[in-house]
Image 1 (cartoon, rainbow, N blue to C red):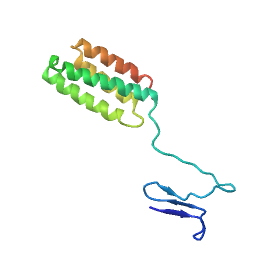
Image 2: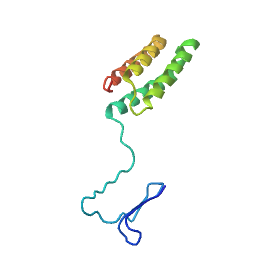
Image 3: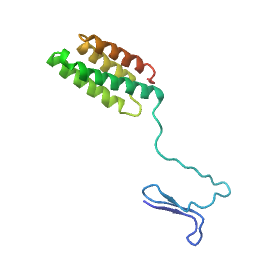
Image 4: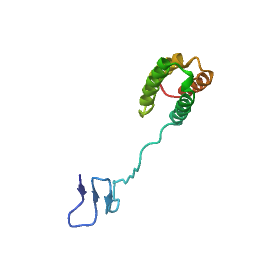
Amino acid sequence: MAIFRGRGDSDDGMHVAGDSNQINTGSVKGDMTQSNHMGHTPAPPALVAARAEFARLRAALDAHEGELSETDRAAARRWLGRIDAELSRPQPDRQQLGDDADGLSGRIGTVAALVTITQAFIASLQGLAG
C-alpha cells in the first residue's frame, strides 16, 4: 500500500509505504495537522495486575499439581486455558473471568496454597471494567 499526497512535481506532501514508513512528510501548512503514532496502546494497570496474578497462579499450579487428583488436574488445566484466552483479549470480560476462576477454585480447593493464590487472582479481577 502506498499513499501519495501533494503535487507530483514538488517536495510537499506525504508518502506512506505499506510498512508504515513515512518518507518526505513535507511541511505542515494552513489548516493541516501532523500526527505520529507508533506502537500500541499499553494495557490498563488493572489488566497488567490480573495477568501478573494469573502468572503466579499458573506457576503455583505447576508446583503443586502432584497434590491434585488426575481428574482435578486435567479440569484445572482446562480452566487455566480458558482464563488465559480471556486475559489475552484487549478487553477481557470480567464476568467470564470470574466464572472461570470460580470453576478453577472448585477443582483446586484441596490444596491450600493454590486456594490462596486463586483468591488473590480473583481479587485482582475486581479492577477490570465490566
